[in-house]
Length: 319
Image 1 (cartoon, rainbow, N blue to C red):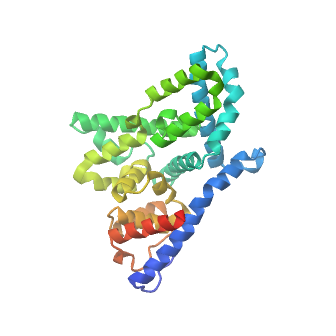
Image 2: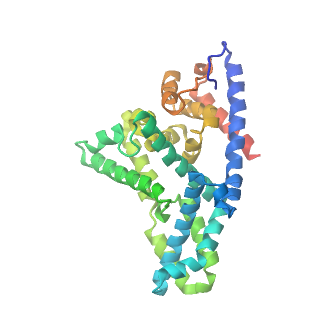
Image 3: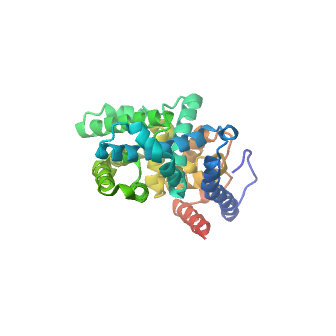
């Protein structure tokens, strides 16, 4: 990726350039969780005042608080605040030690931060996008209802991010299962009460009601109009990254992290893998990275080749 136009390149040289930038971006993504863990564990928060770090810490504390509140309810504890405080840091620290929790929390924090930035810079509403506005007004009751649910979920998400909150019911299924395991490990002494609290949390958890699940149903229901969700100005950032994830078969959190300044090659290839042609990719870059231009010859990379390059980079990063 370049901020200036480069001389004509062959398809192979463009791939070499993009692969090199993919590798560089992978290093940044791979090292992010250990760096976050170090910063979050540092007691001198005056040295690390970045909002992203503070929000991630706050979300882990909120997860621990919710689990302990359920246990307090089962035990009939009158002073819930004092009871929660006794084990709050211990369980939050266990969550902070989990790379997958850090990575997910980091991704959704970046999502909200970038949505706010796009709102200020380009006037793209972080909650009510043109696509949602259109679907909410649909004459089809099922479509309108689904859009209203998605709209409400997105509004809650932006509010929760402002409060540094992460509801248990919004966790991906694998992370919810791991959260329950951590809860089990740290409340073993509470025996049957802990088991009842865990059951109550599991009974209340429905992955189909997660915000992202609502977005997936929304985009799927758009059918032949789903390509409108692949335009960030039409869809808004949150639905946009969901649509790219679906179209390119890429983990949603990975798509979000590809929006970073050092991830332009990954973003360009992800959009190409999602089926966007060069002009459509360039249009998205005008909103996301207006200072960056695609390398000459980018249009020679077919969508299937973009998928292969992303998969190769993922395989290399895993070794």
